[in-house]
Length: 314
Image (cartoon, rainbow, N blue to C red; front, side):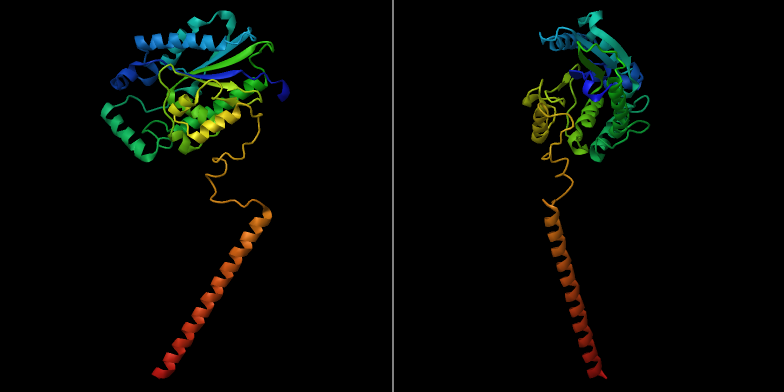
């Protein structure tokens, strides 16, 4: 399939699981493996409400009545339960399929978690940095980034090769039911955010929905569905929000030259032209040459003074 005929999803929607027993009481992790942590009654209701919101969003365009949805879900019990409750809002004909995807699971914090030790560990993480800190016997956010990157490659291959056998007349939506940190890492990878920008992000709430929608030019943006206030609450800086707004009408592959984290965060100053760069290099060379001559002159004067002293002393 040629790139021009790619059946791009209209929306890629990230959903965090509903409230879990571990969210309610972290002591649950001391006796229950993280993948087996269940949703609370409140979490089940949150997931049902998320399903209703998703259905309302996806079916809101009267000009696209033949919409479809495909789900990716983390293998953890709390995400699978969240998906099950979300599914109550959709009929069978609307759901193309579901894939359990291990690469979008929760960050691994180790095996059974000792509560006191975990508190100390999280203090260390804040001192070390949330992205690179690796939990003992577990993962860092950087490790999660690597597997999420691999998942994204598979996602694009599904689209490129039309593995989902999408009918061109259907509006396609991807819904990814996952975890808080994993969702933040997904957005970091997709929008090429820096480590510093990632560390300023806030975790989504239970069953919170974050919508990446396809713009007119073929790029995805959070700013189509979400307000500036929401993006700011998530921890996006003014520059990151401006970038999301630019993406609304940007053409896929287009380069935003004034995006500071592509250039400004890595260089103190770049010359505007090759000629200016050569001029600056010549000036630096002259200054360096002058400094060498001054050093030679100083050394010569020192030598003369030393010889004069030696002559007088002898």
